[in-house]
Structure formats: structure tokens, C-alpha cells
Length: 225
Ligand SMILES: [Zn+2]
Image (cartoon, rainbow, N blue to C red; front, side, top):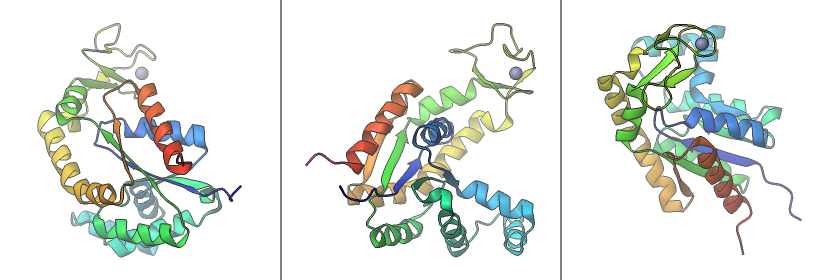
């Protein structure tokens, strides 16, 4: 038997599309760490490293950190021992140039990444987020139509007050979805052309979404010959 390849999973999905839930399930089941560029950036800023200070001033100016910086950060992170068996990428690659760099890395190590796009129509995302309230105390989410709390405005679990997040308003959700589509389309196209892409139906219950993810992984890692 060939030596086991590290498993690189690239997780792409719209805001509110359940990507976070699926990433957590993957981490638990597969024992892989999640490498999130958002978290890496926040950690640098929080630790006030020289890189963090540079990032902070860029973010304050409303600018995106340059690719080179992101690449260095991701490269350093995936060299850590917990990434030896593989990792789940979240928020990376963000553009075609980042995807090409990752592709060179994968070729060098002869790894075929598993690229998963959690597909949820915009209308369904809006329906989910606009009716969503969360507990102020324990952050449990509720859907006012499909999963309402037993008592209006009160959390079932901790009796905390239920609030609506300001970024769940219709305009903000529309804007975030537009940004998502603009950013991810070139990356999705890049992987589609390579034949690496698997579309996951994200409108199904979360257990079924996860089953599709596992199927996609087995197909990529041990393709039927
Ligand atoms: Zn609560």
C-alpha cells in the first residue's frame, strides 16, 4: 500500500451557508486542524507582532492584506506538526493567484486537494439569516419560522434574551453574498477546470450535508479504478 497522503480540504461556502458547522464536524471526525486565514490574521493582530501591527494598519485603512503576507502566514501554519496528516483550509485560497500558489505546493507533494463548495441559493441564505435570532448569553441560534424558541424572545437553554445580529439585516446579507460571489467565482472556476470541484447541496439537513462531504473525500482520496 502507498504511504498515506496528507488530506487537504478546501472548504468554500457562502456566509450563513453552514460552512462553520461542517468544518467542526470534519475536525472532529477526521482529526484535522482548521487553518482559517481570518483566525491567523486576528491572532497576529492580537499578539501585536511586527506583522500584526502592519496588518492592523492595513485593516484600519479598509485594505486587504497583500497575497504575499497571507501566503507566508499560511505556509508557516501548515508546517506545524498538527498539520502533518492534513488540514482544512477556510478563507484560503481567496483569489486565483493564491489558488495557483497552493496548486504548486500540492504538485510538489503530489497531493490532490478535495475542493468542496457548499452550495446554497442566495434566497435560501436570506431566508435563514433574516429570520435568525441568537441568544445574547450562550449564542444558540434560533430560526423564528422553523426552529423558534419555546417562549418568545427567551433562550430555551439558558433563559437568556434573544437578539438579532445587526449583520443579519437584509441589506447587509445581500452585500455579503455579492462580495462572496465576486471573490470566490474565479477560485471556483479554477478548480472546476481542473476537475477537483465537488458541489455539496447545502440546503439539506446538516447530517446529510456531512454525508455528501465524506463521500466526496473518499472519491478523491481512493478513486474507483
Ligand atoms: Zn442561551
